[in-house]
Length: 382
Ligand SMILES: Cc1cc2nc3c(=O)[nH]c(=O)nc-3n(C[C@H](O)[C@H](O)[C@H](O)COP(=O)(O)OP(=O)(O)OC[C@H]3O[C@@H](n4cnc5c(N)ncnc54)[C@H](O)[C@@H]3O)c2cc1C
Image (cartoon, rainbow, N blue to C red; front, side, top):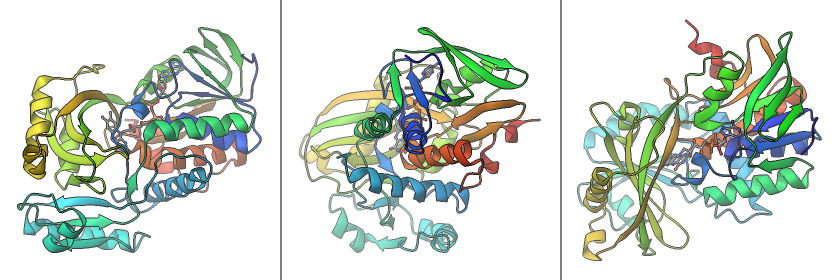
């Protein structure tokens, strides 16, 4: 491992590997360190939805659109099982069509011109197995899905190809600051002198923040998911119920919250969700969640019961929770060279590569092409 480099990226998830890739591509001397293996964090344990529908028009949506461009570019050389197959928000009441109209109008004007309401007949043409109580959906043709592990390994491979060094089993344990500037990082494998440290440590970003005296309000929001045996052809595209966004923000109030979502891998395994809560740094799964997810999955997709489809495993990891559900990206006050790249909540696969690109621009050019002011750590001061 080098003892000196211009930039250290901490964290080998989608955000860290994409950041390392863009920095190395721009000719920077960059070392990425990951305390476990690549994808040890949330980037290995997610549902693989690539969603931009729910990003607010402005910088957040632009990060999403930049991510789609990034996947298109990366797909030329890497099979990440990325498909822009469209994504569905399911409606169970007529009112939801009315309620969502302003949400859709504002996004249509901001670049998501393909957003389209589907009535039940239109929806059944795409997804014939949905239960009769699902009355329609919102379709965004730009949304889709990806194999998250393949995505991380693709960015890692391209970063290496452009000269970045990536080291696994290397944990940052301290950061030296002199006169308000980053000077070096301390790891379990020795010290690396550096001008920049990019904190892409996901739910553990507060640990690095604490090393330099910063309070980073990122928390562990556990999300549990079921995986079925291979049963190709049940769902054609990622989908979730319209209530998902509401319940996900309330996660844990009075126990846990459940909201239906489904995706299907290329091999045919259904990824079924989800249950979330705030038990701290806990990644075990619970029988209650298993039951709740199964019940909802069968309610929305009765064919699962007809075919006696079996769940083969469950898993849990963390949404990188921030109080306002926005990421934390960019420079921090008072410490030159300390850059935040975390807080990607439940949308890291739809924003991580775009975030990596703009963090690289911030370091290389001084100004990112997408303004990051709304994502700064200082918004949490007071
Ligand atoms: C069950 C579940 C389902 C989800 N589904 C989706 C989905 O469908 N679509 C979507 O967009 N998002 C989804 N998410 C969210 C998504 O997984 C995250 O937003 C995303 O993976 C965050 O990536 P990251 O690179 O920022 O963090 P991570 O992938 O967590 O990477 C951070 C890395 O930093 C490393 N690290 C920590 N501390 C140190 C240290 N001191 N030194 C060195 N390395 C360190 C960790 O080991 C880890 O590998 C889901 C999350 C969960 C849990």
